[in-house]
Image (cartoon, rainbow, N blue to C red; front, top):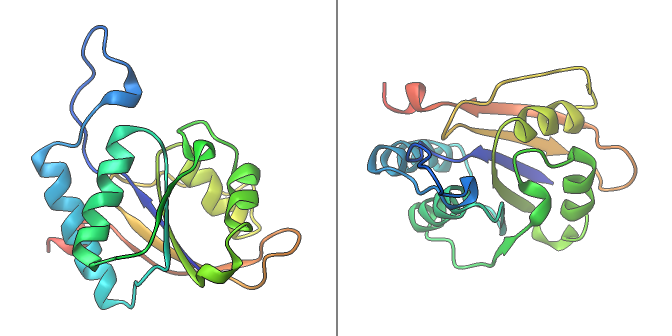
Length: 161
């Protein structure tokens, strides 16, 4: 299965009284996310399913990706994709969709860095995933502990170069 892990784009700064989950993408955040997705599309990204965090900035990033990819499939909100979610819980969610073939997950740090290590069967690995970055990890089988291989990683700096 191809898994595409994408961190949300740049979001508005927190405001007093505003919940963190309600922060929106900025115009720059949308543009950078779209540029990264376009480059990922050239690399073969074509998810059968989109899973997203319930936080607004991740939902909006998933919408940008779906628009660029002309994705007509389903987008599913997954509570475990919140910033301090558990890689193990995310893995359990992924395993519910074996027919998808490829899945785009839009989420946050620190979860995505931990999820990357978990999927690569290197739990001690800690990576900071930059905003609007996408990585492709191919996972063989959905049983037990994942054994993934990192195929590529695209950051906004690469996509805008």
